[in-house]
Length: 461
Image 1 (cartoon, rainbow, N blue to C red):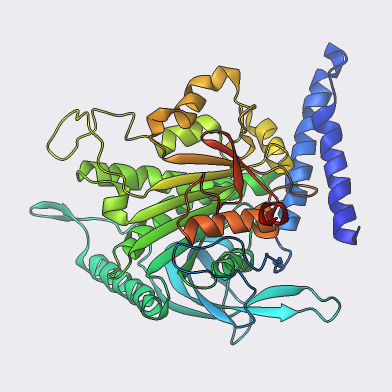
Image 2: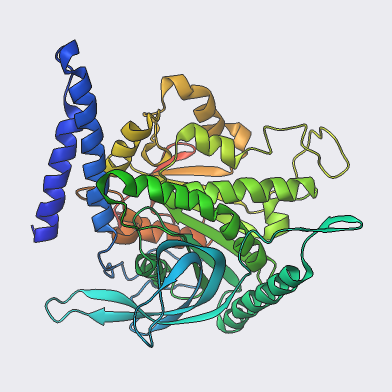
């Protein structure tokens, strides 16, 4: 075990000691509560340290499954490729010629390009990714845009509207430029989790894009995470920064979706980023519904993918299906319609792991019945059975699949980047449009809509 591995092991033992102790007498309760709180924050601090490690290029099998179009392989690219970034992080001083974004919040949304380069460490044979060559293309006006009083009432300032329109057109031009050379006229968007720097977010997106053979236009939406709040405050600072970013990222996704030439939009998020994405989906879903449409028809969203979601099961249910549970919400000029707008290929896929120790700590910290990223067919909380039944039942009309992963290493929270079987499965989902139950997916049925990831090499034999 290397130095990082030993450090993480020690961190987990500290957390496990606090999380696993039992009350022995009433006189110890107060001290034990404090100890447990300390243990949770120690563990989250250790988890944040993991976010800064460079992405290693995991080896995938030569052929995972036949594709719908033609046999293809998943292979590591040795070429530099470009990502589009959108962020409401504040700029920081790096050097006279370098551009960098930190963990502080900006009052405006910026976008541009970042290059992802595969490199090989001189001390090992493992390939890694490196982010470089940042280039900011444009930015939106500072928020809030504000209003001004006129003889006819309040209105948005014309200057702010003009600046917004110019920035939106520039962002769409960037998307269109990439679409022109992409094999697929589809966009993959990734939102990162807690403790991630700008580079971490770009590298994770780069690894996803590389796994998809760089066939798609790839966009990293990165919010102000990874600050220096320390042991006690870092997670809560990131949590509020993620909530701060919802409006900005929703605006960016809408503008990207409305770019001419986009055929499909695939939204992915990890850990804390899934709460951000759930809020975005909630707002876009309501926006589409009141326009007598669906988020597929209105925004071309085909897939929403949650990796290790750090969000309470009930909260996720409330956000993702808010418009379904509100029949009084206006459907255009129609009130209380019984029919639901056509959802098209829209599908939600949740990758979870009961052994995800980071989410175990988060469950204790927030008093959650269960984090969605730990959900399994045999772990549905009895006092939350109604919400879980809705997720797992026929009422969802086949819109949701839960993919259980049983591996993951010491902490088991970033398996979507490191495990070949998980990567092979989401590649089949996004690139090959293969549904759960098809033998080309690397999953086996438990009880629909619950599935389990299988070992890639076993599946190929």
